[in-house]
Amino acid sequence: MEDKRENGGSPEQDKGPEREFRGLYKYVKISERSLNWIIIVLGAALVICFGIGYANRGYMVDFDARGGTVVESQKRMYGDLVTVPEEPVREGSVFEGWYTDENLTIPWDLSKDTVTGPMTLYAKWRDK
Amino acid sequence: MADNKATSKAQEFKALSKKDQQRKIGDLILNNAMYIIIAIAIIFITVKQPKFISLSSIVNIISLTAAKLPIALGIGGCIVLTGTDISAGRVVGLAACISASLLTTVFKVFPNMTSAMPIPVVLLIVLGVGAAVGFVNGFSVAKFKLHPFIVTLSTQLITYGIILMYLMNGVNNGQTLSGLTDSYRSLITGTLFTIGGVAIPRYVLYAVILTAVMWVIWNKTTFGKNMFAVGSNEEAANVSGVNVARTIILVFMLAGVMYGITGFFDGARIASANANTGLNYECDAIAACVIGGVSFVGGIGRISGIVVGVLLLQIIFAGLNFLSVDPNMLYIIKGLIILVACAIDMRKYLVRK
Image 1: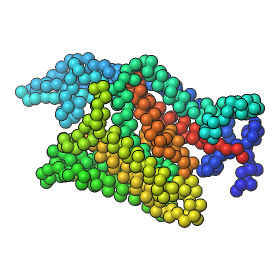
Image 2: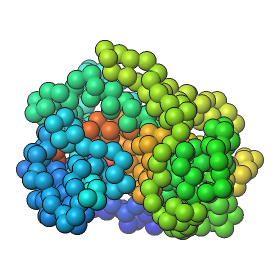
Image 3: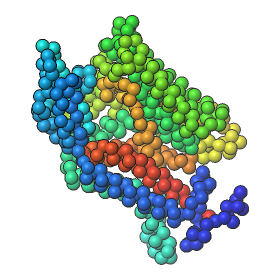
Image 4: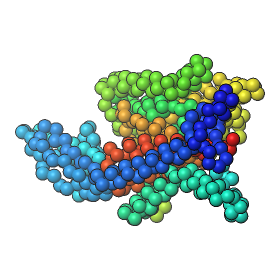
C-alpha cells in the first residue's frame, strides 16, 4: 500500500520538500496545489455570493388576507416598520388587524414592530 | 502545524530560503482563510450597520450561541469518531414537540391530561428519547459497521415520521404546539441578570454549565480519552484494550442527550414547536464544529474550538440578518462556508513526508 503511494506520487509536488496528508486524509488523492486552488476559488465564490445576496437585500413581507381582498407584498429592510397596508375587505366580516401566526395569537403592531426577517402576516376577521 | 508557526521566531523565518518563506506565508493565509473572510465580513457589516455592535445585538448573538451550543457539543463527539450525525435536527424537533405537548396549558396532543407534567419528568423523557435515538445510531455504527451518514439519515427520516405522527395525536391535527406553561418558559427564558437594561436569558447559564460538563467528559474521563483513541485509530484503540463498540455507542448516546436538551430549550425559547422545529440544525452544528477545528481526520477536536465555531457562525448570520441579505442566498453561503472549512481542515493536516 505504502509503496504504491510513493510510486504514484504526483509530479506537481516538485517544489520544495514534499508534503502529504495525515490520518484519514492520507487516502485523498489530491495535490497541495489543487487544494490551494480549491480554497481560493471557494473563498472567492463565498465573497461573490455575499455580494449578490447584499445586492438583493430585503425581506418580503407577505399578507394573507384569508379570503379578503388581496394585499400587496412589501420588501422591507431589517429594522424597518411595515408600511401600513390598505385594509382588506371581506363580505360579511369586520377586519380586526394583522397577526404574525396562523393561529392568530400574536398581533403585529404596525406602528411599533419592526421587520427582522421574511414573514407573512395573517388577517383576523370577525363575523358581522 | 499552526502552533509551530505561531511560535516560530522571526529569526528562524529569515533563515529560511525564499521559497520556504513564501510557503510559510501561504500556509498562514490559506489555513486561516475562513477567519480572514469572517473578519472582513464583520468589519463590513459594522461599517454598514453600526447597531450591529450595540449591546442588545451582542446579547442577542450570545443568546443564539447558547441555544445552538449543546447540539454542536453533541455532534462534535460524532465528528471526532470520523463520523457525523444528520439526525440531530429532527431529534431536537421531537424533543421540542414532546416538551411543548406536556408542559402546556392547552392539551391538544393528550386531551385526557388535566395539568402539565412536572418539569423534571419531562426533561427526563426528552433526554431518554434523545439517548434512545443515539443508541440506535451508535449501535448500528458500532455493531453493523454501517457508515454514520447512512445510519443517521435513516434515523432522521424515522424521527421525522414520529414527529408528524405525534403531532397528529389527540385533537391537535398536526398544528403548531403553543400555550406553554409559565413555569417552563421562565425556567428557560427567564432573566438571568441584566446588563445595561438588556436581559440575559437563563439558558445562557445552562449552556455554560453544559460546556463545562462536556469539557470534563472530553478531557478528564477515561471515556473521553477512549473517544479520541477510537477516533484517531480504531484498530490501535482496540488492540490497547479500549472497548470500541461501547465507546461509539456512548458517544452517539451522549450526542442524543445533547439534542434532547437543545430541543427542551428550543420549545421554551421559541414559545412553540411544530414539525419544522430543529430543521437543518445539524448543518449549523456540523459547520460550527468544522470551523472550530474538530477535524474529519478523526481524533482531533476541542470544546473551546466548538464554542468559537458556534459563536463565529452566529456572528456571521446575525450580521447578514442585519444587512437584510437575501435569505435564499444564506443557504448557499452556509454551504460554501462548510466546503471552505472542510478544504482548509484538510490542508491543515499536510505534513512533510
